[in-house]
Image (tube, rainbow, N blue to C red; front, side, top):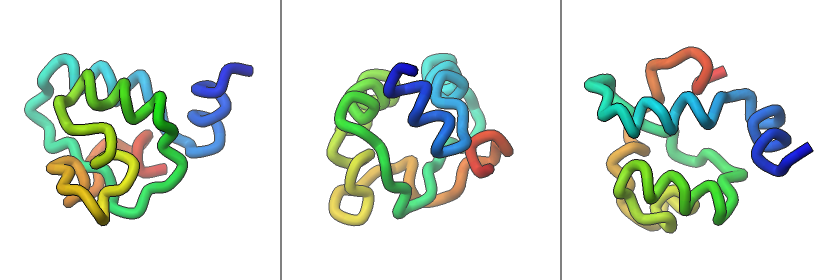
Length: 80
């Protein structure tokens, strides 16, 4: 099992779906709940490339400003 698959299984949300929505420039509000733990450096790097938000802001939302961390995502698969 790859680390990303294991991560998706343990966290209960679909990372590729989030990636596609960010790439597509979806008009939906994409926010990750503050305090989410378990985002690995590799995943943070991918999210940085897709969203333009620095990797450190994904890993430590309480310390760095992340515009995606102020509201919970409105997609059930991300909130599960």
